[in-house]
Image: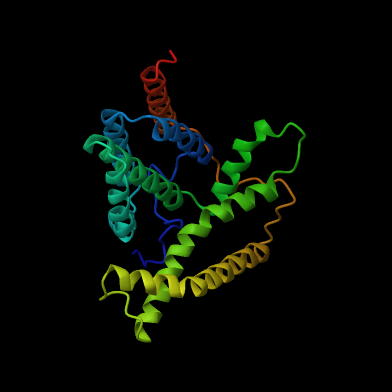
Length: 251
């Protein structure tokens, strides 16, 4: 599993994907989820996967960061294959489901790698604002949402650190069979969870040191302009949704 310090967190490079407005990124994510959840069209998901690969390449984030995440989940994929086979699904249906899961994981990774925590909070606030009929301050719930989103990548990273430490003490995760690895992961999960929560508290304290106040509305230091690329990606995602709607016969 990916052990690099940037796993699941912002990767500070300059790219066309990094410059996309965070609000557009989140809207595209929501649009992406519509056909991702409902459609079983292999052609559609192959096209979506191709677009995702192009975005990953354009992000200038090392591709190994993305693919190591899938490699780290290889045993879950094996278990999933047996589960799908027991349900009597066809080969095409199985491939579609695996592509769906992989695409969802990589899309979230793309958002994490190309959007700073400040921009992500800004985007969540703007996306939620139209639903804020009572004019509540969205700073605190937005901060909570982003913290929850970042919890799981941090959990994976911390788990890798704990597994390395456990292997040094005799609980070898890297040279055992699947059953041995499962036992090591389960036995070390409590410690992994404790350390992850501790890191989350440290990150929250660091935000307080930077005088980030969740009880007040914020503005971003960077101007979040909506450029041609953002509009083009938004249009492509809308096309995917329209295709899915026509597929199910709503239009």
